[in-house]
Length: 188
Ligand code: GAR
Image (tube, rainbow, N blue to C red; front, side):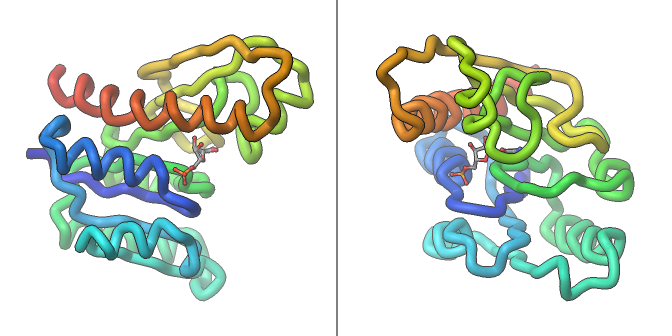
């Protein structure tokens, strides 16, 4: 059974989807830690309700990224974390973190990478007027939303869809694709 840490900054709907897959026996893993860089983010309450250990911290209270990442790595080691899934964690990892878990950190991003990296990828895609959108899961490197692609799923954007409807479609795909991709990765 893989000991998994989920890193998130926001609502945590992808965290919930992974946790549901674990609970339903669809994913041979245990979420041993949730790491969150926004102490008021809804994902924290979601994790605590499931009885999962949470490491919540405010980056501004640390002198540097190296300082808080050292603290995260230490907590991951204590929890015997083997694999890390970024699920809406809106920070770039430093080489320190990447070296601690080589080829063991993946991310989900709401676009067909390499298009629309960074914040508000859905808004960027809508502003560009693309007719096909999608979701990408990839290994993480030291660049923003960069690293080897593992899985992608695309969908057609219907002309009448609102921003909200597109977002719902993205989330529906993410919540299915993330647990499924983790399962496939660990079976290899
Ligand atoms: C997800 O759509 C995820 O793809 C995106 O943040 C959202 C988090 O939602 N991640 C990125 O934009 C990474 N650059 P959630 O908190 O409900 O899971």
